Image 1 (cartoon, helix red, strand yellow):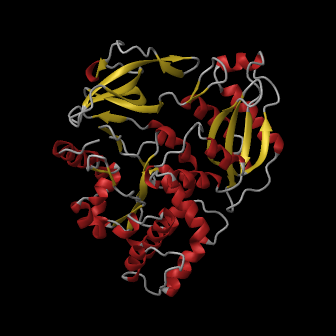
Image 2 (cartoon, rainbow, N blue to C red):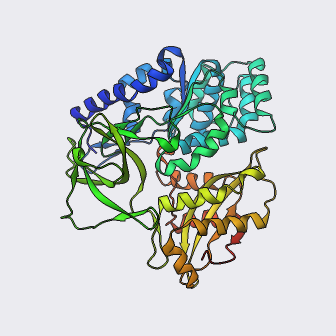
Image 3 (cartoon, rainbow, N blue to C red):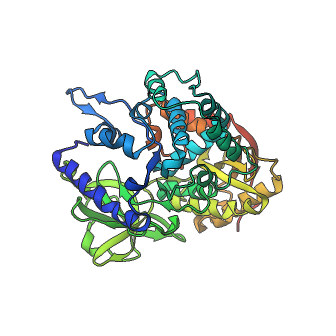
Length: 477
């Protein structure tokens, strides 16, 4: 999207607005310390017409104002943000965050998935990071000259700091590890709605006691709204829309089959609803007209009106449109899938397990086709997952099917759909999946794991790491 002067001014205004509720609850963190924010830029590309194109986040990192305040407000030098190797950049950002741990008042990234990627990376590299801090030398595998130059200006031998961090990390359980490593942190900042809500349970485990703050709703197409209650639970987050940021219209969406949603019509003549005419409890697809040139553009986000602040509507983000599983004529949405997984994973918690990641696809290689879920599971104590009880995993399959909508259950009973399958993958499988998408050009900070896998190559990555397969033993009806 073109970034015109008017668009830039709107972003500047928006920053002041959405940060106000956060400042109200946590104070001005700009005056209190630094942010450990995991940031990753992608190189600019040149269009055939000679214009420069970049992601929104990369454009922000390139701004003179951002570079001016970076060293004062953030722990990460600009060289680590623009490092072409995201793993080298992540290692160095964590290193700088640990060196300045007593100054960190906020930990976060744009998406919850990136924060978790950082913590899991830390689990695998904390001994190496401690060694670097102890000796004052950067690991040899960090070959990026920008990162090495930035480190040479800051890193000095500090055995006492290294021993303290080593003691914290070398514990039986990493529950609350973020708070232990960065004791002055006031909250975790990240988007944890929509597809990111699946990460909240594990993130809460790591940050135990620190609130998760998801303070804004914006997309590539438009600035939309802000969260007026930053201390609310992730499941209760609503965004108050700002009518001066774009012209918002809404395409009605209907609820069917125990809360599953679908478009009323794909007809372009379907009547759009203005922002002032939306109704509480109703679901809509967001449509925007912007000063950057979009006219009645369907964003693809499905929202529900959760209430009003004065006369301004507030929306909960439900899901992305058309993210569904379907074997025959049934349709299982992202929300349907999330609810079913939530019901099933409750069986793991009393046994000391956490479902860290999941995704899905429809396997039609045999008839009838069936739903396949890839689950990555870890133990609450220790990095690795102890042996799973097959009976529990089979029960998870059954619980999922029982939680899906009625149409699915009817089709299962009639053998139009075969038994649901859960494939448990080994640790770090979803990190390998992220690495694949990053290698194809996706920015690590902008990566959103798909709810439904379409890529054959991505399927191969997960299938090659399967350590157990479990099936629902009976029809849910």
